[in-house]
Length: 177
Image: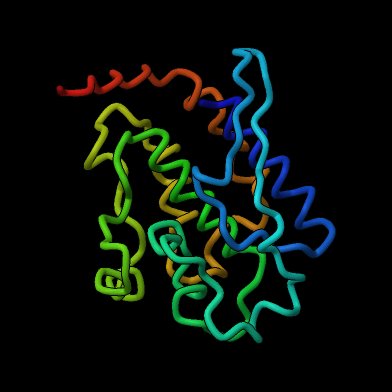
């Protein structure tokens, strides 16, 4: 889990250093090498926009991307910037750690207004063994106000890498016939 998170953070920081917003960071856009020692790659950079172009988009989300989208992406707030990717990454990291979606949304805008009214949920409601410092970092990533989020994806992991690595793996759900 930590290795994947670190590699996604590095990919985002690489793109952000060049002024590129991914705008669709979600599990479906992370490719994992089948080799256990392999790499994780952030894909679908074809939907990226240069940072200065994002505010001009009429509706920046691909269908189905609402569950990982930052409030400013959903509602087209002016000034959408690289911190939208930090929010997207936070939702994905929350899901990786909790084993459950942060927002339980339908595949439309029906559930989206909750994202506008509140910050993201506390991960400890799903997983009590998450240390406070890690829970606070995730909460910071999921702030409604982009100014309150970490400035870089690398900063997300600073100081909490050991806590992520120490978390026990979640049991894998078995398929029912």
